[in-house]
Image (cartoon, rainbow, N blue to C red; front, top):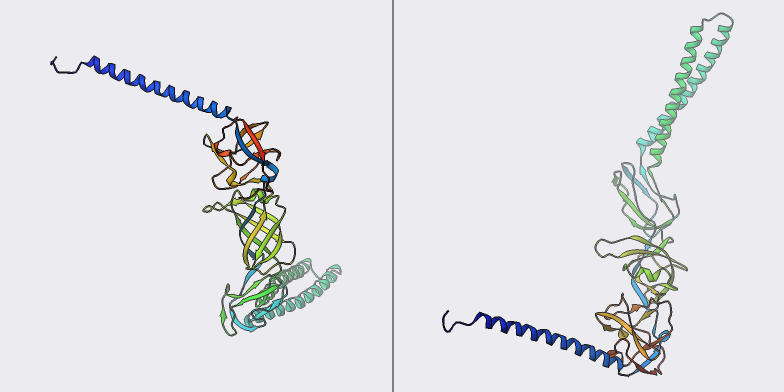
Length: 366
């Protein structure tokens, strides 16, 4: 070994001593923290308290909303023909089945008349065939006509009756097609759009009118997934539009969430006079669940919660749903107890306290 080379045994001994020193420092730190906690627990802290009932509140929620019509239809032509007559304009109020326009369907009219004439011809021929059959029966009974002649008359009558049935179906179909040339309102409402023009050719599917039922309306709102839980039992639901408040009732919250926003759609009914379809505003309601204000929350061991004073001792109650800066639902079955206000920042769970009652009123709020 070189005379100036370090002794390996000496290096290992230094490393072992260093590690032992680090372990002792850790033990001392743990003991110090424990002693500090014990000292804090034994130290009597002066705090200000108020009743839990004065602290909880019911927050007001809102969401964007819009009044939508339950029925809105674009009335289209069903046959290819020229628009002959228009009987309504934009803004006209119409009844169900009211005539809006007529198309020039002379060819459909001709088909219907031709089918009707064919039916009348067949009825006359059936009358003649029936009388011929009756004579054939009489002659056959008298022995003056063979059975073959009677069978022929019976077959002719049945053939004519089948042709009459077919002709009646064709006549009914022609009448239906002719009726399609008359454009009618599918429901009572207001004409909010007119695309039809006299003299224009309208192919099947051409939009002629836009009709809206302004009486059957409801409010549509997009709700956060967690918001609808407090809405189901909300005591008051309102739609606010241009400063006017319209009371509502919940009809349904759809059991499906939007893929992008994760919001759910809610539908609400007006309990009194509704406002106009298309009106935008805010849906407002009072959450029935009691909440604690965000400023009251403190963090202990990575958990947010509140301190309650119980028989001279501070008890920390963690709230699993709590988030920084947001009110939290108070899910405990009781609202009895004393909430620690001033002095809660330095408290530890189990620390002794002397309480002083807060003289202010209700403290609920964000």
